[in-house]
View 1: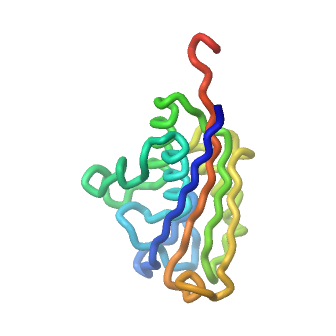
View 2: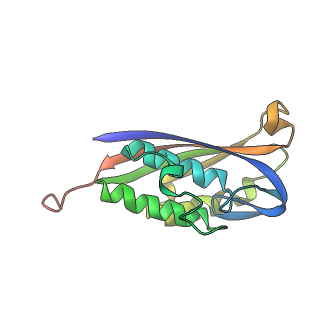
Length: 163
């Protein structure tokens, strides 16, 4: 059985913080506001995994009372991958996009894919990261924040009898 999950996250810019996307610090840009590292890309992937497995959403599992402030979102991805595995599924692939104006992400794309794959315990070729702008439309186009979106495909993990 295959299952698909969709994830979406938004954070406003916070110039006092570094910009972290896909577990990678992007130089020369304001960071995003949030309790963790505010990595909208990773948060969208977490929500997509949880949704596909029928396990709720990021807020249900990682409240500010339960996780340390500033935690790496790659840690949240790894913990979520373990939850998904515990529910009997494995991640097959991730396709994700960051929507942000005036931030060049292409130099960081491969490193993002590699770090996300490591946190998910899958091959880097199973993770695709894209970036786009809104052509200066809306809050993203005005430079007020960034959006992360992700689709995750899960499959039923083989049982111990099937291995």
